[in-house]
Length: 405
Image (cartoon, rainbow, N blue to C red; front, side):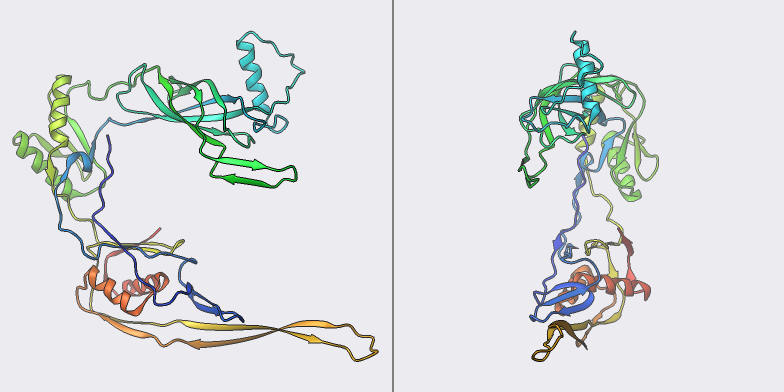
């Protein structure tokens, strides 16, 4: 089973020196005195800095760093009908496939509906069903399924899914789904069109709602080497994994194929291979450190700095432009017995000012802890930090890859 690799980083929020909202380099001041600050990034962006004080590298199990080649889940998908809804199903005039599916199902059960008759149903909904077939699943075992409306049903609460086949990518049926839905959402609608919805009532789950009917071929039945695929491409981790395996099972037991794959000589007997893999996945090694990288999410303003990031000697000054907008209303009143009309005209006053910027200095080889401390001292917002990092990279002082997502 694949277990996500634990991240060695720690989130460190940067405190703000003022409570204003920042959006890309400008402050907007309204007539009521409220300030809307804007710097690079989106409103309400959150800065995440990874690891001011990181623990030293520690050993991790192979099962946390890699997965066995061929041991994987398989996606299943199906189509079916949910019945028993409380007047919240598909409106068949807009979803004719629901009526067609119902007619086909009734025909298989011996009920013939005339071709010119289209039942106007409100308690039936056409749904898509999806699930994941776990590795080594055997016929008779059950799996959880998710049921989602594909028509215009308002809610699936209280419905029951009728027997529906679940197919794999090869078109073969691997499971049969049926059961009562568990819906976490809730919705209510008035006659005037007003509606209140909590979560998503058009999606539900059925625990153990599908029974496996066909097994996927076992990837471990054949002889030969077993491959271990790293979750992240890293030549150092691959080399250390080979060293750990050779130390446990003897020289030549493992070899690195590339930066992701390690091949291990394994017994040919299926039972012995399982015991061998149990020993392999519990071996420990120290993975290679992550590359020096800064991740910037331009949509949310989030900045993530890896522990290996270094900054060469540089001095940085960053200021902000404040724009103050005062809105007023002028009323023009005509004279007595005049033929004119009272006119209301807006009057705006716009002024700008440059805030005093503070300069701070990075010493040569500044660590993540020093970067965080310097940014905290000047109270830089996430947008400010993005601009500073981009400028440091252009100046050649940022020893890291800057990746924008």
